[in-house]
Length: 162
Image 1 (cartoon, rainbow, N blue to C red):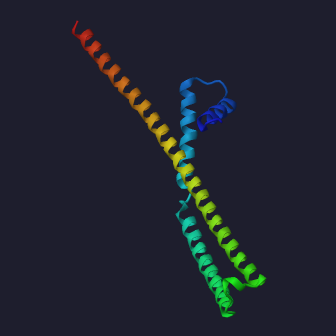
Image 2 (image 1 turned 90 degrees about the horizontal axis):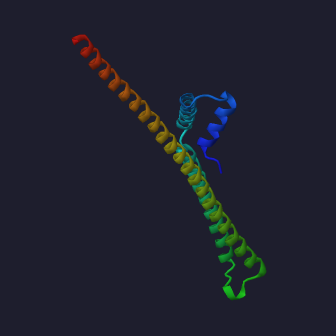
Image 3 (image 1 turned 135 degrees about the horizontal axis):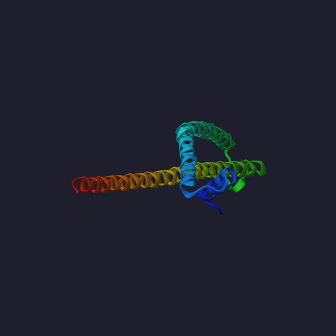
């Protein structure tokens, strides 16, 4: 499986062609920074999670109310476990099945949201580390330039003194 970095490299090769490493890194940084800005501009999952939690809570309340109503109706017949009618057994099986389906759907939804959130966080972490790497390269370049300037000044001072 290709990484995001590999895909960006391929894209730059296709779009720009043969460029030197420095130019390639500049293009790659631009693409990665644009990706980071897009990720940061996406609204957080908090609103989505809040909406889903509200919907889940409402559905749970409605489901519990319907279940209690059905159980009360079954209890009103005064049925015991030993003499349940086929219809009452069917109602109980339907209740159990609905409860299992609801629980499974909730678990799948939570897993999906956690995967999406984890993916977004991983992408942002990779982008941040890539951005930090670019900053380090820039700082090292500036440091080397300052060192060269100091050496040049020293040589100029020596030449002037001679």
